[in-house]
Image 1 (cartoon, rainbow, N blue to C red):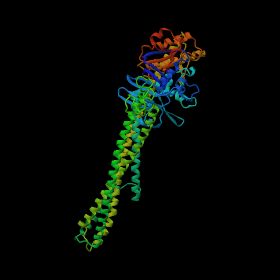
Image 2 (image 1 turned 180 degrees about the horizontal axis):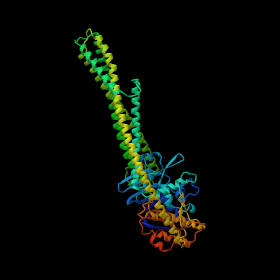
Image 3 (image 1 turned 90 degrees about the vertical axis):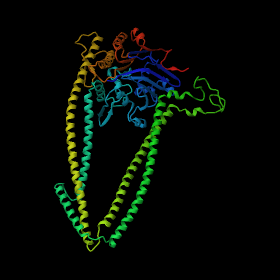
Image 4 (image 1 turned 180 degrees about the vertical axis):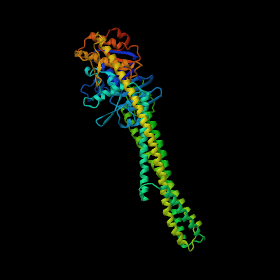
Length: 640
């Protein structure tokens, strides 16, 4: 399964900045007293990973003032997922995240939410992108006639140990509104845990995808069969028949009668003399040929016009896509955009004293360079505008393509009509003999025309009967495949459930061992079981301070299980712990808890933990410390 590793964190605004490039695999410790930015450190990270942070909003009752009062504030996070390197950037207050993929050398902007023009641009959210990189399948949860797709903020509830959630609740509630009953529901919490604890079964997901594909093919084929049956029903109604029995015999009989009548008509023709009625008919046909030819020229002119419009629209689309890609790149490198203003030099940042009508270099070639510079928000608005324009031009292109197809069809039909008229003239001048038997020929022709129509309809019925039989055969085959695939999927699902149960049992074992070791208990004590909502219970009352190890060991058990190759759970080998000191827990117990975290120092995972000065053994500081905060060295530093 996928693994997340943070490589560096940067924050910049017009007033404050922060930078940390000391992150490593294993344990990363940030130490500081309250009020110096420990929690802000974790908030910056999770916000750049798409998690909602209430304290960054103007509407917050308890905002972080340094963030709220700052402007042009951007977080940059360098991360690795399965050894692939990316840089993520998110401007505080904007619901988009820009991603630079080093391997693909591409800049892409994703929406945090599943709405708006930015989402339509990629047809996926940032959460979809990172979940895909982590190898976690899209999972949709249905509840009360609503459907919710599992997102990265859902999975982070078991990855981010925050200090705001009550420890007895285990699962993090950070970024989740109390009024959001869906996310706070038990079915949602169970689903998150089950996704994290499920071993990845490649055969299962392949069969699941195959079943969805076959089901879609079956649905399409059934719609096709329904359309054919509707056509068949309409033809039967025209022929005043109720079924297609004896269609072949009737078709043979109709063709035999047609052949007989045609032979009789040929026998009657003996001369090539034309009467007034025939001449009048030829003139009428010629007039119609002229009219149809004029229409054809007009349609061809319209087609050329539509073709030209389509070509221009496609060029505009290519230009817009190129501009969007460029703006994506600019948004990603936004920190370099706002270097120039009318008051500061872009190089030394000293105040610029320009003579009027002179360039910044001092020459007399005046250039208002500031008019070329946009702010981050302006670029975001520009991007939204370009995406909207792209959506509009796509609609225009679709309209042109429909017009082109319709005109093409009309032109083909007009050509066929002209050909029919020309052939009719040839038939009249070549075949029809006007003599004393003209009336007999007309009488026979009147009989031939409806017989031809009937034969044509019977031919269509015969063909549709074949199509219906073929479609039914395909449907039967698909239903058989679906049945076998579903049976195999049920077997794989049973294997998957067995694997899940195996993972649960191992999780309970790891959890119990943690608690027994922490409390120096024997094997008969602290035998942890998970209830139906996967909440751990031990069958006895414990003091309030027990909630801290209860919750921490839950997170550590997930992390430890994810490192065992025999279980392959979907936990991304990544953990953020924002301050353990809570619930009146004593300092010796806190220091002991740190020893369990220290066990992961040389493993293939990453733990980020913030702590006060007195909560750990000092030896940890020299080896794992990535920053040390104090009243003189706060996290967010004011620019000089």
